[in-house]
Image (cartoon, rainbow, N blue to C red):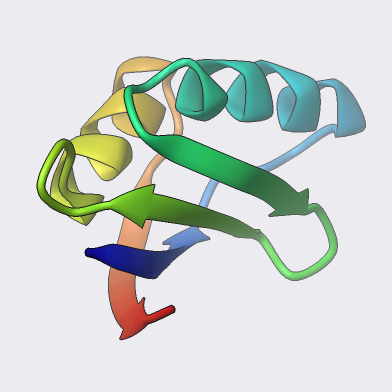
Length: 76
């Protein structure tokens, strides 16, 4: 089932971070429409929860060195 994840970040410091995060999250299975909102410190992505979870997406971002403060999931 398709869902939308919103990850609130604490440590987004530069525009080049956006590209790094977008590439890493987009590279996960069944993830589409990844958008990093630099000024808001958020990552938004559509994903298929039968393949990957929002927590797994948060782990990908954390492994890049960014702190995820909050994860919200909505129905697409």
